[in-house]
Picture 1 (tube, rainbow, N blue to C red):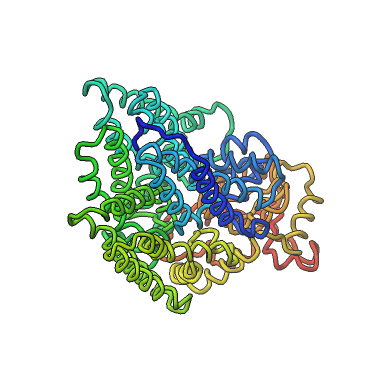
Picture 2: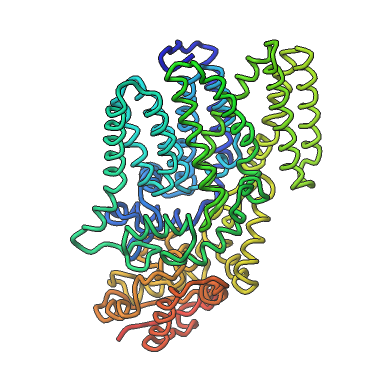
Length: 631
């Protein structure tokens, strides 16, 4: 089966594919109503649903002070879901689940065109049972849409081998991926380009020309929104997580080189890199197998890499379409593994969700090929038992890292693998297939079930992970990287992000009553740590001073003074949680960009009067210190 020889989809195949999609949907929709999401991005979606300026610029707040730290496309999709169902966490989670299920379907179609129905069905199932995929698709991060768009680009390349116009569509989808998560989308470009150049028809010059045209399309789509933002003639929000409000610094600094090589490009770069490196482990060739990342993505990674050796045998003498598939997935996987293994800046384990389609496709192709070799008389008959045994041993190692969780499972995996190996050697085909597949998928499937069924805290939603150990690991990292004082404040923040406590309600009501006509009802220091409860639970014009971490110069102290003088703002809140964190948790590695935050707070203390809590309400003291800056 190749791209050039489509086979009509039979009823049995449709039922099987439908079953895989149903299982995926169940895993990602389970407990939809009680879902906890990343509060920073959820607050932005709520703000974006309240007006077109916040919608277009991916505004963090409805007052238009600052944007989030990512491009807008994923949040545009989530905002459309909110427009249909109203603002609820489950409405955002529903959009994510739909995108995830669509990605499984697209992967099936791509692999089916490449190497046939059996491999396509297995690849879709392995993708749906990848733990990090479940973790991301149950959250509200942009990675879900990114993976879908990159799979659509892969589909375009598989079609372009015989229909060149599809190469331009592949460029469009990669460009849309850039508008979803910036440079992360470009990681797959070497694999896509290699697949087309090495296997498409036409002269070398013609193939290069077509790739150049597709690259131009990718660049045009990728840079369309940044160009509009940078050339915007009127007032616009400050671009969050930058030092100068430049969307180019966001794209190629904070979301670019800072992630790859470290440094402090963009606001909070140093602090983010410190925490990010701890969450994902240090860079090195074995990072994807370490205690932080291994359980998320590594289960089938050796099998996928081993399948590249299979490719050397399968692709020899194969038609161009078959070679294109192997080249595309190989390039996707090798480039992604290199980037995520050795990136020295901000890194989180969930970034590896971008590798999941390539791992699933190559692992499925390797297993199906090994099965077909099983009936031969040569050395190839040992490929299947070797693949199952090696995968089971790795699963045992990963499961042994949480020995108190389902302690019987790792031994069951080894027993199933042993039975599969014996059955394969004895040519008991059906037993070998059933027990071998069970041994391969038991570990990651258990992680997916655990992820779907256990409650998830807001702490985990900020850095999603699958399986039994992700929450404990994240708690440890927060404690180590912020210190006890900041940790106490952070825990208070995450416990209250999705509700407005009585003191916060009293402060907001007081500000609304005293200054009903000001464009900004209340400004809150500390960014997401202080403003999220207001942005998530009300439609008041609340401004999160300092953006995400509170470090953005949005506004600067001088601009804050101009706001007050112009009657744009009267009340500023220094929230209690922010005070508990010691001004955003001034941890080792906190960059010098906190200087603007210090200047703002200094100006507030000097020029504004603290409002006695008794004047506000009986619980107001718990909300923090409210400053009245009326002149």
